[in-house]
Length: 157
Ligand SMILES: [Zn+2]
Image 1 (cartoon, rainbow, N blue to C red):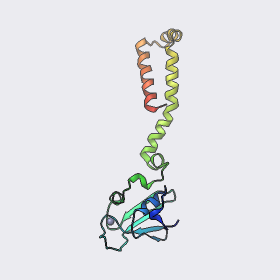
Image 2 (cartoon, rainbow, N blue to C red; image 1 turned 120 degrees about the vertical axis):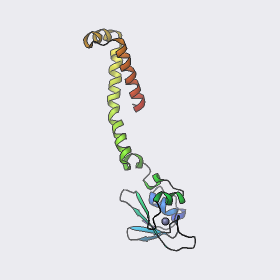
Image 3 (cartoon, rainbow, N blue to C red; image 1 turned 90 degrees about the horizontal axis):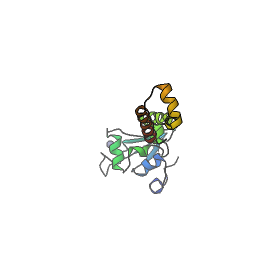
Image 4 (tube, rainbow, N blue to C red; image 1 turned 90 degrees about the vertical axis):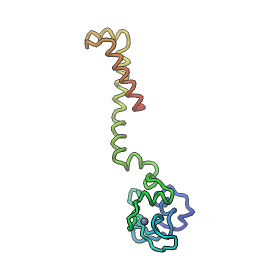
């Protein structure tokens, strides 16, 4: 980990994206300190901003003067997502997104199975057997088919 040429280095790493937009960056142990782009005066040489890289590549930004990290990001042209490694921040670093994604993935095989099953039931010969056995009328089956189609469409299964 080096902070040489950060300003001119094009990097996909969140730590480089963040440090590249900051001034007066200095490494201190396992973290960096820098000038806060939000509240510090142009001539100020203080380093009130703390920047830390987690082992998973996520970057934490903290201003000791109390600026919100999103204000800091805004000041250097970054978004919240820029604090996370590119490929996986959406699905792996956000608990809500992760669980939703997991639910969708879990549902896909079921949705596919349901649609195949309903399509099978819609065939004329199968219909006669099923209508008798399950006491379904044709309207029930159309509703079921519509639900199965919608489900697959939503899940993109
Ligand atoms: Zn600040």
